[in-house]
Length: 305
Image (cartoon, rainbow, N blue to C red):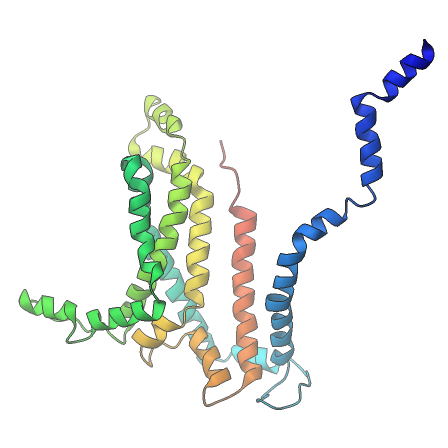
């Protein structure tokens, strides 16, 4: 009787699970490695190793193609603090920041309307309409804006037809902001739509019952709920705008030099200073890393109650 009871206890589900866990514990550490191996190898070959090579080149002053790599100091990084180059970096940051603000202001009403007001049967079609520009080449979109904004383009032709003063936008900062905002607007709309779609409208009704006006309900109920989406969309647009090369190159003219164009000139331009170009690249990587760290730290923060 006692032997039968012990066999029953030993063959219980908890004992079987413990035995299986004991036998599989020796190889359990291999499972996450197998799952992460493809992406890890990809990132190692195409991100980590190139970044390390760029960092090594950034420590070599005045290196050119074919020269021996002999890291010897931080002269290239100190050169960035020259007022001329600092102005270029600040201009890039300002362009990316203003583009982020423009995209946020323009995309929020659209995402709000699609997520909460538009009929459900039309939502996918409306989102597709905003994604369609991404199906064309960014270079083609930039040339389209050149056609619209040039002195004899579509915009000035329309203004002349209305007997209004033509606008000089091409090869100026406003044309760069227009093109960058147009290119990055769909990303902001999609991210905000994903956040607004999950909005708990019952909290808005509760706020209205408690006497909150629409403005108070928006800032104290809607914004805290979609704050992760606002942060993620803003950081994505800012990072992409910071590294944009095509729009400032084609629509900005010589007066709108940006960090991306400056890096291009150091590697493929007449100067051919790979060390300084690598230092500029590492500086941009640092700025992007700081932005991503801010998203990780504050993007998923729970709203205060």
